[in-house]
Image 1 (spheres, rainbow, N blue to C red):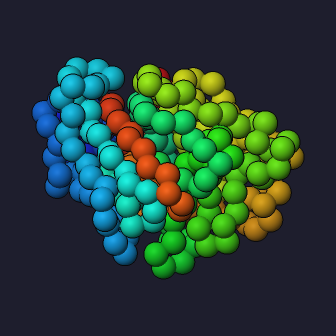
Image 2 (image 1 turned 60 degrees about the vertical axis):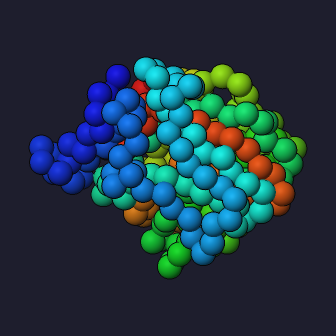
Image 3 (image 1 turned 120 degrees about the horizontal axis):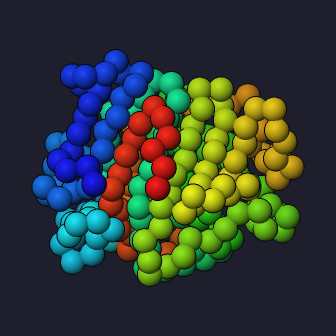
Length: 235
């Protein structure tokens, strides 16, 4: 869909309108999409996979090992300075369990040094986690869990999210809004008490795709047709 990796912000657009994208059909450009693993990395790996893809023939495969040091990610520091929209097609080999895991991590200077805004799973559903105070979106009450969703296994899914300059978060899975992981100004998410107890506004400095487990869960994820932009791209 996108041809070669494109970093339009570098030459054509102001940084606030940045867009970086890749379908990996020209391979994995490790300078543009480097690996990322904070503190340690034991057992996880990132590879170019020419046997499984959403479009074309290539995708990026992440084999994540169990335990924190089994984490590994790949991604980019080329993020817009205001609103950030991310779209990726992803495929997972295993369903989320009750344990906490992440498949996207974003260094977030609003939380302090070496802290991350994380997207992953817990209680078998899609959720966000703020590393600095361990707040979750949604609240992991029975009511909160019911407002999110699992990610289907064994098939490609279009996952999108928006981090607003005003602190709002919007999340879509296969073009459908996921209410439990959506917080916008002027509306109320009754299952976001933890998330909204502070005036948190993310200020991310990178977007990284992969796997991180805070228990023993391992998993394999594939990522394809990735876009980071200042406007929504859609599926």
